[in-house]
Length: 240
Image (cartoon, rainbow, N blue to C red; front, side, top):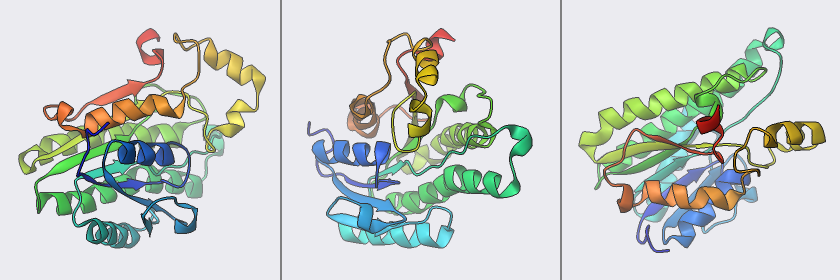
C-alpha cells in the first residue's frame, strides 16, 4: 500500500463518514494528508484546516494553508456534501441554496483552488464524490440529485480542460453506505429491506469498499484515466 507515497493530499468534509475513511485510506497508501471541515476540532490528522465550502474565501484560505503545510498539493478529494430529503413541492429556496452551494459550487471552487496549486507544480489528481443520483432520478432528492448531476458534468468538463495542465479529474459514485448523513434511512427496517432488494451484491457498502477505488484513481496506475465516474454500488446501476 505505497501507491501514493510522497503525494500531498487535501480531503474536504473529512470529519466523519466517507471523508474520514478516504483520508485514512490515502494516508495508509503513503500520502501526507491535510483534512478539512467546518470544525477542525472534529478532525483527526497532522494537518487540519477549517474550511466552510459554502464560502469561496474560506475554501481559498484553507487550500493555501494546507498546501503551505504540506509543501504543495498533488491530490484533492472533494467530499464535503449535505443532503436533505423532502417532497419537491415543499423544497424552499434556503434548502436548495444550501445543497447546491455545498455540493456543487463548493466543489468547483475547491477544485479551482487546488488546481491553481497543482498547475504551478507537477500537476495532480482530483477525485469528486458523485452519487447514484448523478445518473438516476430519486424522488424527494431533487436538489441533491441536481447537485450531484452537476458534479458529474463538472468532472467531465474539468477533465477535458485541465488535462493539458497535467491534472486528472475523476469521480466515485458510492451506492448505499451507512454514514451519519444517511443514518436516518437505516433506522427504518422497511427501507433497508427495499434497498437491499435492489443491490445485486446483497449487502450495503462498507466504507473500506471505497478505499481501493479511490487510491487507484488517484495513483499512477490510473495515469491515463480522466473524466470518468466509477460506481462503487454493488451493481445497482448495472441492474436498473
